[in-house]
Image (tube, rainbow, N blue to C red; front, side):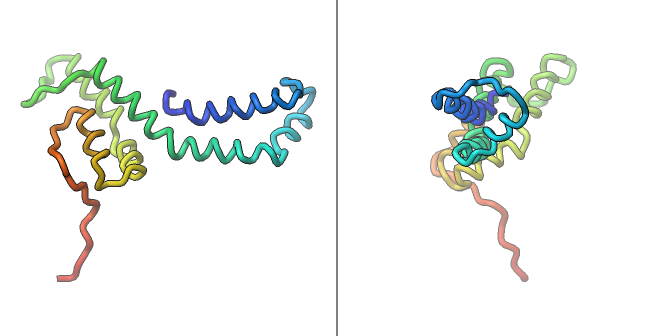
Length: 144
């Protein structure tokens, strides 16, 4: 839900734009609503919603997930996992659901794989990563 704040903010600006035009907020019928939604000066807002969802939502999701990790999950201890504790199982399951590979990959695709920002993001998640680490993608396939 937190990751949807950027597109919802653009939607809010779209609705606020309607009230700045001096029009009434509520529509009398479906035709008025569709006419308002399809007018040409609304197109930048629709594009803005898509751009906000594509570029900003992954970062908002990661910020929220990092906050949840710091407050709820906490720091993991090295060594074997304690499977007897329900709290430990909950922490691992919550961590696995908050940080699936695709969510992390969306952020790294936007930041670039080889930049320090990726290392900073992983450090915020609790990893120990040195300075000037290069995050290569897949290796090129060569015929040998």
